[in-house]
Image (cartoon, rainbow, N blue to C red; front, side):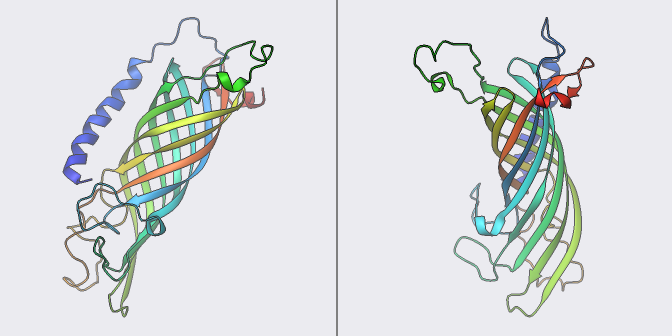
Length: 280
C-alpha cells in the first residue's frame, strides 16, 4: 500500500476508533456486578512482513513469500463487554519478524542482498463488534434425541484498533559479489493501526478456543530500517553504490493469524476483572 493513500485511510480509522467507545459507555440497566463481562485471552501465531525489503517490482497491493517473510508472535488480550455486541479491550502483542532478499533478481522481485530481523512489542487498544452472537439456550434437544450441534454457533467479530510498536532489530547488506557485508543495529518506534476478523469455539461454559486474522500497519516506515532519505540508514557504506531509490516506497505492514485460549471472568464490585473467578 502506498504511503499517501494509507495516510488518508489511517486518519479516518483513528477518528472512528476514538469516537466509538463513548457511544456505548452507558451501562445496561439492571447490570449485575458479578456477571462475566470480561474475557482474558492468551495466544500464539504467525506474521507475514510486507515492507521495502523483499518488495515486488510492480505495484501489486499484497505480496507473500512465506519462507522469506514469516515470523512468530504471542499476544495477551483483556476485553470488556460494553453493551450487547460491543466490546473494548487492550492487548500486548509481541514476537519476531524478518525479511530477506537474495542477491539475484527475478522477473517479479528485486535481488539486492539485503535483510532484516527484529523483535517487537506492541501495546494497543481496540474495539470489537460481534457479527455473530453466541447462542446459549436451555433446550430439550437431548430428550428429543437430537444433538447439541443443532444449536451450535461460532461467535464471530470484526475489530479495529490503534497503538504503538517498538522494535529492536538488525539490518544486513551483502554485496552482489558476496565480498562485502554490512550490518547495523537499530531501534524504531511507530504508531500502529489494525483491523481484522476473529471468532471462538466453546469448550465449556467459561472456556473457548479463539482465532484471529488481520492486518497491522505502522505509520512510519522504519520497521525494516528502510525509511531515511529514500534508502536505509547505512552510514559508512560508500554513497551511491549500495542501494537503489526503491526504498521508502512501501508502508511497513504485517498480516497475522493466531490461535488462543479464551477464559471469561467475573467482575468485582468495583467493576475490575476478578481473575479468581476463572475456576468458578
